[in-house]
Image (cartoon, rainbow, N blue to C red; front, side, top):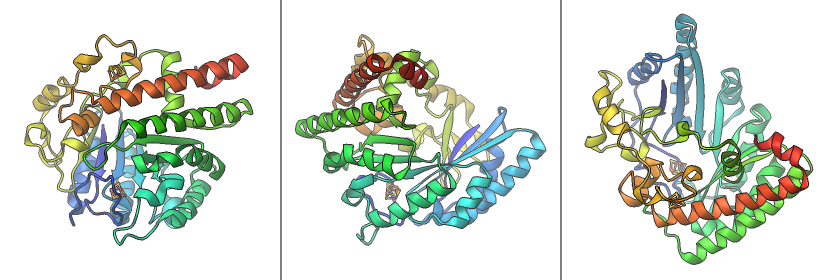
Length: 353
Ligand code: SF4
Ligand code: SF4
């Protein structure tokens, strides 16, 4: 099974949109090993995602888990996959060599040219220049790493230039996600500005794709792929049934925004999963009422229980912001898809089907 290990609640950064409560609370070695055992307790493969706070504050725990899971994989014959989401400030060559040896997939939280708008050290210091160096180092070791940018309203003017920047830096995969939660506030004007930036980005993508660039960006390419491949019910949110967070104390919840809510408590790594509660909670995730008759329903991320809860307080209610954003992304991605198809149908088919 897949677990997201919150190795620590602590972080050396203080991003303006961060919704995580920072506590000096780290996972113990005992809890870590119990979590690894749980990951190997069912299914044919075990997956761990190292997460935080900032997971690289606890490099020792990551090394321990990798070593333990490698032995466990040999013992059980089960496959082991690992990934990590990091703010990148503490990446170094030694760690990256180990990560490469274990086939770790790394998502680098990096806002590109907007990095200093929201992603600062706890002390307020800038991080852009450091992150640029760390991104280059990361790509040297793991060229398939993903740049993950979070777009807050003040970062919108940098959107399309940041996509170009990531491409020029050498990233092949990029994800651009709007910042949600109580710390950000989106206005109509900002959403319109975002649309203009998405259109500029689509124009740039059209140009580089036609020249054969190996580059993929969520959400635009993802939406085109969804249109071509049709609805995949597996992509629907299943609240904890696929990937379960483990808190530093070893408690289990359906997803990060539910941590601490007793109603959604799913057990702990010592006593195991409360299967009855897992079934009850997974079945609570439904397509929002207001989306049932919408034509875009099957291409929209309306069913992400975690985002819905963060935005509306209800896992089955989508926010007007998310609805407006989804509509705009689908519209822009369709125009990009049409453009590429009309210019080079063969390229379109090989890229998206
Ligand atoms: S790096 Fe991640 S955990 Fe740390 S403050 Fe920023 S968003 Fe929050
Ligand atoms: S576009 Fe809006 S109404 Fe349509 S499925 Fe998405 S969130 Fe629901």
